[in-house]
Length: 103
Image 1: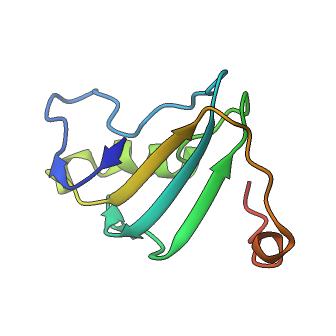
Image 2 (image 1 turned 120 degrees about the horizontal axis):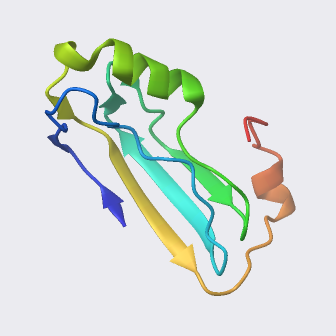
């Protein structure tokens, strides 16, 4: 799934930020290439891994900011590619050495 620059939802009260969800049957890897989420820079080069069944999504602070600044942004300019895998993924030691510990 690609999250590429797009017009933001325009009806006031609409939830613009993707909801928390869990992929019951798949692991999800997301590659962050850049852009921003309502004025907050997306970290280029970041890779995230949401193991099968783990709730994940944008932090609540990002949701609150999107609601507060609804009138200030008419586009979402994130650049993220997410891939769901049928097989469970196990991070290697090299990957874990760069873990930011944010999830």
